[in-house]
Amino acid sequence: MKYKVEPIGAEFSNKAITNFEKLLESRASEGYKFHSVFQVSQPGCLGTGKGTTTYLAVYVKE
Image 1 (cartoon, one colour):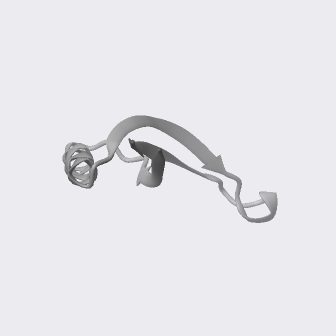
Image 2 (spheres, rainbow, N blue to C red):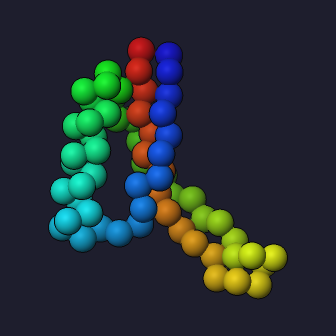
């Protein structure tokens, strides 16, 4: 089994959703099936800056 994990951002506008649909279709054409999405956070630089949050999409190919 092979996995692919990639960031998909944290924006959920209509345009971003359409782009995500296209990304899912693209990965499907490569033989990957959508598995899940999860949220990750990264602290700011040296713990003093503003942290960022994004989402990662996970795909699987059997």
